[in-house]
Length: 141
Figure 1 (cartoon, one colour):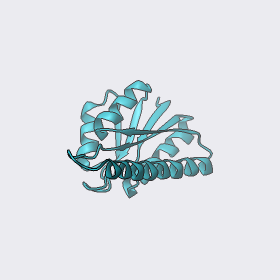
Figure 2 (cartoon, helix red, strand yellow):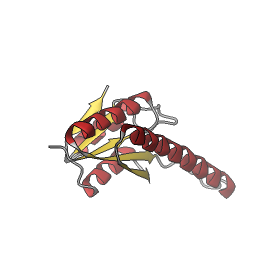
Figure 3 (cartoon, rainbow, N blue to C red):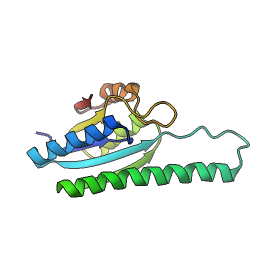
Figure 4 (cartoon, rainbow, N blue to C red):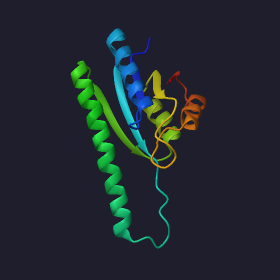
């Protein structure tokens, strides 16, 4: 039934559980897994030095790449092939958009993320995804 599954991760314990759940689905149903990490656009203020902006974006990119590499390594150990995506923007909107574009039939995500400062998926993000999505959303607690 769910041949294509998109799992949203942010490095939190809940997103790790969501990733494991997605892998279990994949093993049982021979599903294809997409893994997405969305970094919220940081508020860049007028007059902020470009070196500071570059540093912020560079750090975000490195952290995101590390997170997706960890997911890829975990998938490889489990014998599962995944497709990873890094996107900037409003997390809930980007997750739903990528699910639609990729014809995913299920979104799996954690119920809570890392928190408002560094986090991607607060409870409100998973709730918003479940409201906006055209496919079922499995929220892992």
